[in-house]
Length: 260
Image (tube, rainbow, N blue to C red; front, side, top):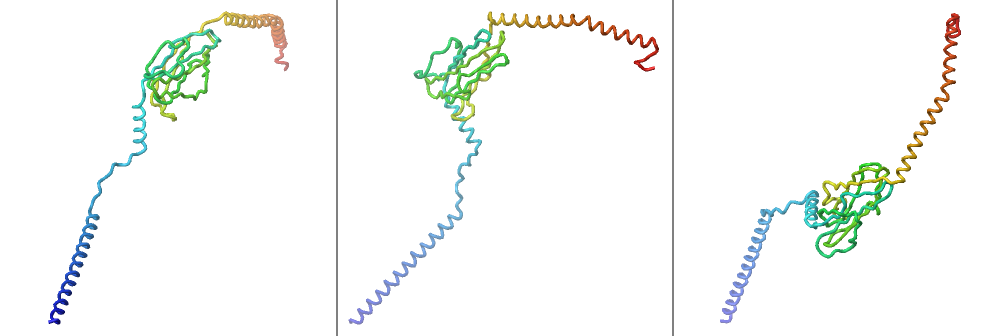
């Protein structure tokens, strides 16, 4: 009886062991199948295409468009015409301000600023004043490369030049203004076309006196030259007459230039 129970127990344990081995084999096989399926799916999966890389030109255009879109409305105060005596320097001044907000910085301008014009600001601002005539001298009262930031509502920038002319008359000056992108030389906004400023240069008594003296000296020099010419006319004429008579006498005697 005891031997039967022992044998039955052995059979049960053997059955349980075989089932455990079979279960482990099934789990292992399932794991292998899942792994193979994952590998197969990785090999056949097509990744979604990402956005194409942006080139330098696209980035440049995007930066410019973004910065131009952030520009502010501004106002330029200037004079379209002014006058000065000949030889006397006159200060010409302009002011650029960002509209909106409380004004910060200098606001008092010289009496030459009588006109206004809309202009976009929001970067580093630069201005130029040039002349079309060599008789006009313009000197910027700062470093010509100076740029002023006008980036927030209420900001103000001013430029000043001394202008003089060596001759009276009417001249054209050209006023240019540029909004640059940050610290670069890239222009985000410019005055197009440039503003033409009329300069009227008047005569002075000193200029008239100097002109009269110059005229007198010029006429005096011409008179001295004419007097000298008249003074030397007689000996020059006598010398020419003597040469002519000598030549005629030689030809009358049959001689030609001293040769027989």
